[in-house]
Amino acid sequence: MSAPKLHNAMWPGLVGKGDEEGQEPPIGLREMLELTAAADVKGQKYDGIDYFLFLPHTNPEASDDEIRQIADMIAGYNFSVGSLVAPVWPGTVGDSAMGDDEARGKFLDAVKMACRIAGIFNDHGIRKYGVIRIDSAEFGIEKWREDTRANTSKIAATFTEAAKIAADHGERLAAEGEICWAGMHSWKDMLDLLEEVGMPESLGFQADLAHTYLYTLGYNAPEHVLVQSGHSEEEFYAGYKAMTDKLRPWTIDFHVAQNDGEVHGAGSHDKTGKHCPADDPNGKLDIVKCAGYWLEGATERGMQHICWDGCMFPNEMLQNPSTWNTILDTMIKVRDSGTWS
Picture 1 (tube, rainbow, N blue to C red):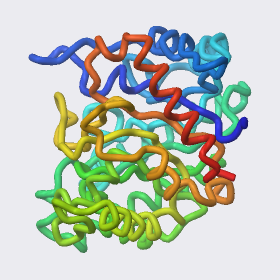
Picture 2: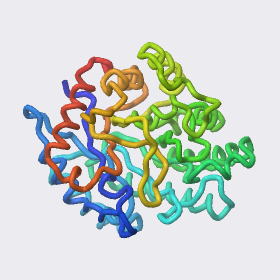
Picture 3: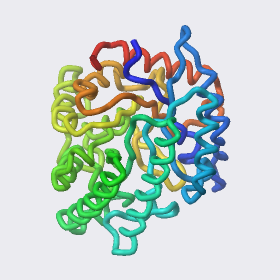
Picture 4: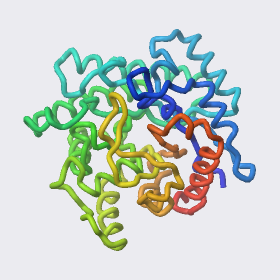
């Protein structure tokens, strides 16, 4: 079976890494590509990568020629590029989508930069599918709670402008549901935001198994809890189906992941869904079964690939070849489960 294509994310080499106390150094793009290329499960390799458009992997202000050189390097590993992550956060190019005019302008600048780089990759031929990922870039929900309706509307207005920019470039945006991002921190608030924008052809949802698991538990939004602690398996899947039935029609990008039910973080990227190794004995998810709830009808929504996301793994784990073989084996099982077709 050749669909969906299987991608590995490059950003685990960056997210939560740095030079602050207690942090490990980032892992460079070439090393992440080499680790990904070395993985092999009975002759099956990764088909491509998903890619974060910021330093130290990429300067988003790099020249067209420099971006083409990156494309050449990635192609040298026989990889396609799929979804791209726009640098929308404060400290990168962007700023809060519910901030003042200057902040929201920076957010839109980040989307424009991502669309420019996407176009270069597309023209190069290395990228033929995938979306551009965004979130509200408003960390935490305290400020959002000061006026929930007005702040959601402000995020929606920013996302609407961003979606128009993407559409003008022939791209689609996917908003990643994650409990740390204001206005996107519960399944219901995420749905409300998508519906307020109301541009499904240009703005959809990016579902990550680790993050959306915490949606069901009501982290940061107990009023939207779907699964109580001590739940039975039957109760869990009833709650899971309730969530996926609402968000699946919007889902245009998907991350295979595992979660142990804990909230985790490192550095500036804190208090979010804890990604675990695919075979973590504490993992709460039947990855293949849970993925099936999201991937039903995926091709009808234009999806052609799935991606692994395992942020904030120790470098020792990331640099261990067996880590990537285990992940690849899990992704093959998701692909071969039959849900996609």
